[in-house]
Image 1 (spheres, one colour):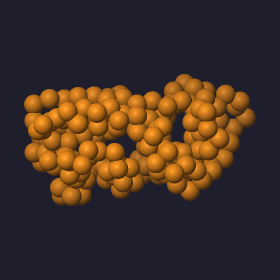
Image 2 (cartoon, one colour; image 1 turned 135 degrees about the horizontal axis):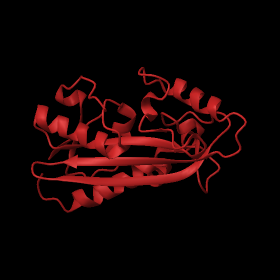
Image 3 (cartoon, rainbow, N blue to C red; image 1 turned 60 degrees about the horizontal axis):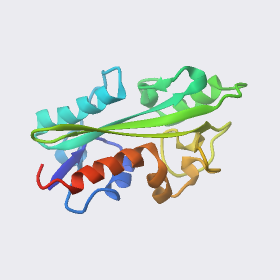
Length: 194
């Protein structure tokens, strides 16, 4: 069964491919010929995930899922939140986003943050939502070369490594996206058709 993951991010595709049941062939937006940037105009993570999954279904006819992820920093009143990917501008540059967070937290002791991922699964007759969350802290500087996005500055609770210092397998096990994907995977195991 073919299932589209509504993302252009090849790092996400690699992570997700490892987690889905073997009966599903995971396709990216590129695989279905979708090269447009699907607008994320909703004010919530849930809304943006639904919007992207529905877009693929409406325009390409494929069942699939989309995620939206936000980094919520306590000292920044929950920012960047739904604007995490474009926190430093519409160019969606991870390095610029990290620089902006580190600059805003300079001299602030409270480094508490959490990552939240919401996945919307749109099939031919249903819509399901799956949520994953992980709490942690923002480091003073970048550490590690793995992962993507804010991974070099986010250290999950109970670990000394940032996400960017962890193996993909460990990150998938404990991350916000990994937790949401486990719920998606459990749902898909019981699905006979989509």
